[in-house]
Image 1 (spheres, rainbow, N blue to C red):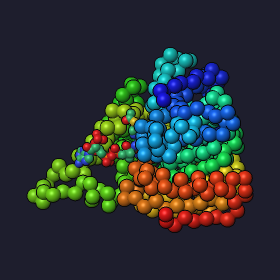
Image 2 (image 1 turned 45 degrees about the vertical axis):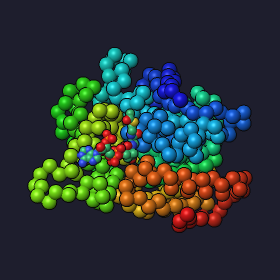
Image 3 (image 1 turned 180 degrees about the horizontal axis):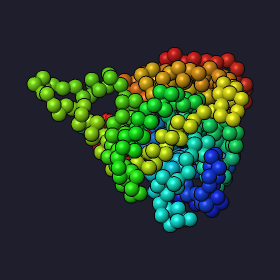
Image 4 (image 1 turned 180 degrees about the vertical axis):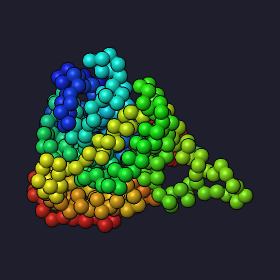
Length: 356
Ligand SMILES: CC(=O)SCCNC(=O)CCNC(=O)[C@H](O)C(C)(C)COP(=O)(O)OP(=O)(O)OC[C@H]1O[C@@H](n2cnc3c(N)ncnc32)[C@H](O)[C@@H]1OP(=O)(O)O
Ligand SMILES: N[C@@H](CCO)C(=O)O
């Protein structure tokens, strides 16, 4: 359960043709790979999380949770370009001896997935029983399946999309504008862009949460107030909190990777790519998610043969996927029971689970 690293000294080629001489991947594993190698749960994390899934997805992953190390071999890799141990813009470029900063190659979700595949090869994993992720994690799940480089039996995708929307790109661009407006971002220092990152997190939160949850959590009781509102202090606090644990360069690049997500790029179409998927699939949409609205999940579910779709009601909106772990446990358990009973059979009927 400790952070591990794997360094591959084979050059890593990016989708855009750039390369780096070596790639380090930070990862966590929990449990053991069984003899049949058929107990792998691979978790793909979202924008600012890390490889310690027991830490950031408690309630769903843990010693006694649905995904536990006694029943499964759980793997989570810190994504390419992220701050938590995998090669990223603050890593030293062996060609210059200096951090890459903005010389880091622009990478895509496909590059992230190819880094995951490199780790799978290193770990001797040639079959994933359950591949799960939300948001940027869900983008990886879909892209890894489309890549077809490893056998995957079941997919669980939550609050994500098959192709980045103009709305999603606009949110990300607004956050990058905030980072770029911070002069320190351009000075080549590890803490460069910190104030911009603070503002970017404040913008991002507006896409992760809802009007309802702000009313619930940040309501003012003092009617005489004309300044210093709770909601203001909350935005500032959340910005500071991210700055303490993340860097502006990784954030800038990762939002660009999200923008690049398009399952149909270089393939027939998004719809056709999804319709060729063979894993049994559960898609979860959150009606209050303004960033990845349910229509995007319905599209995914409608095109993957036999996919099941569940609507998770959460006032938290997009971040509900990290918070509503009780409901997710129930929905996923139900999905797993159904898939076990249908093991080996071809599911052609799309089933909508309206409620549990
Ligand atoms: C190394 C690490 O930290 S691991 C990384 C952890 N994060 C991740 O992996 C990314 C995924 N996780 C997340 O995005 C988030 O943690 C979530 C969505 C799961 C939950 O969000 P949170 O920010 O924890 O919850 P919430 O929105 O309720 O905010 C609570 C925090 O805001 C503070 N807060 C609430 N209202 C206010 C206010 N009006 N003014 C100032 N602070 C406030 C609370 O005191 C609390 O502070 P704390 O986090 O220091 O305890
Ligand atoms: N709030 C989460 C999810 C974003 O999709 C994060 O910071 O990673």
